[in-house]
Length: 113
Image 1 (cartoon, rainbow, N blue to C red):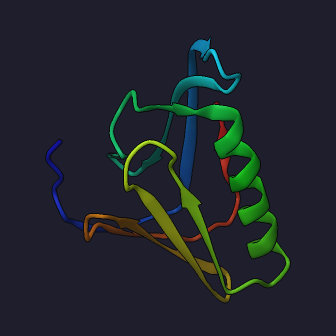
Image 2 (image 1 turned 180 degrees about the vertical axis):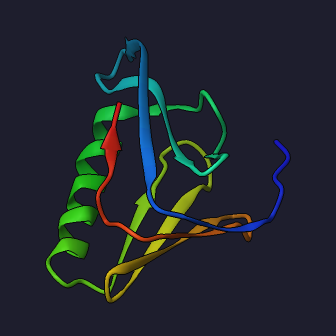
């Protein structure tokens, strides 16, 4: 996997969720889930991970930011990928790691597909 390391400003980022979905033998559901910001997909377009587990944790993170929380995180289960969210007034700074890509989101609203 190769990443560019641009700094961009975008008005929103989207959580992209798509099938096919597959239930593992131990129960969790795996499907396509990644974050789209501007023209960048993180960790990558078509990333497969534990959809229900991520959405549960990420919805808690969004609620935390919505109620004047200063920091929250979107952690991916498969791999060392995460998005650190820092609220600065009405702006949310999203830092995508392990890479140094940083995007500014001007809205805390997320679009679900």
